[in-house]
Amino acid sequence: MTSSLLVLASSSAYRKELLSRLQLPFEVAIPDIDETPLAGETPSATALRLAREKAAAVAARMPGAIVIGSDQVATLDDEQIGKPGNHANALAQLQKMRGREVIFHTALCVWDGRDGTAQVEDIQTVVKFRDLPDAELDAYLRIEQPYDCAGSAKNEALGIAILERIDSSDPTALTGLPLIALTGMLRNIGVTFFQNKQ
Image (cartoon, rainbow, N blue to C red; front, top):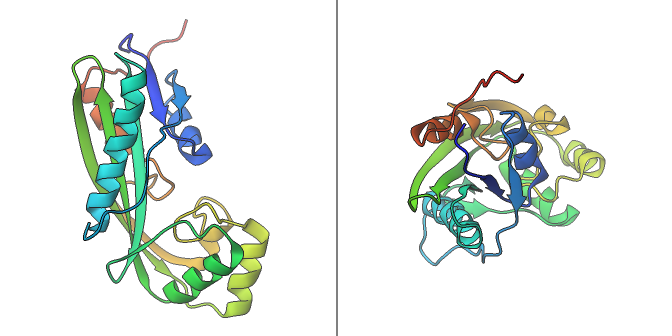
């Protein structure tokens, strides 16, 4: 393992839990950036820009660190679907998405503060939502309250019951941090795994 500090640029508990699976020591720093999409920006471009801006914002405060930034944008018919924030918005999202395929763009940026280089990638996941009645969608939301999740469903928990299919090259991407892509990027800059812990 490189001696450089590893930092997760995120306030997300989901991303923190995912990164902890790699058993690498890391710190968490919250990036303070404006996450508003730009006019005419594609969903992929939004996710990639925000992942990079999150990493860059934290890297500026922590020179020499290896910083991980990630952002996720859900889209239906090329329209961005954000975090609902409340029950009414979440129900409206699920009603619109039922029986449909939604594309989740999970962008990843690894910023190497030792030389200022950055690796970025957009990992796409196609999710097919079940065609469920309003009563079931409402009941799900009241139980899980996924109001901080783009697309209003926690696939890693009860939300899996409202999904019909998930197609992705990286099963952790939908939860918010694509670990297959991340481990590849970290290996590219000399981070090693499976250290023998004496």
